[in-house]
Length: 122
Image (cartoon, rainbow, N blue to C red):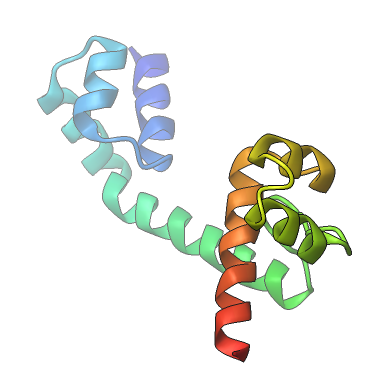
């Protein structure tokens, strides 16, 4: 029983809810509550603390210049020529995507950005 209590306390420190801990260990919820109270563990406080530590780590990484997410795919230098050919129906959309070397969603996103920039300069 001491091993189960030890596991319950460690799960409580991860921020896992009391209901989930009881369910995983197949123990009564009230028993888990008593164990965590005796150990001075409030799963919600631990979850908030872990979240704050994560946010602090992300902020620190960003301050060091670390970037998160996928790298941005830039359009090729001849993108305006590709768009002009597409708009004049010289090439199809599929051909424009192939010439630009971009995936479909990326192509449409860059096309939308290009058209927006073009309309703002006019």
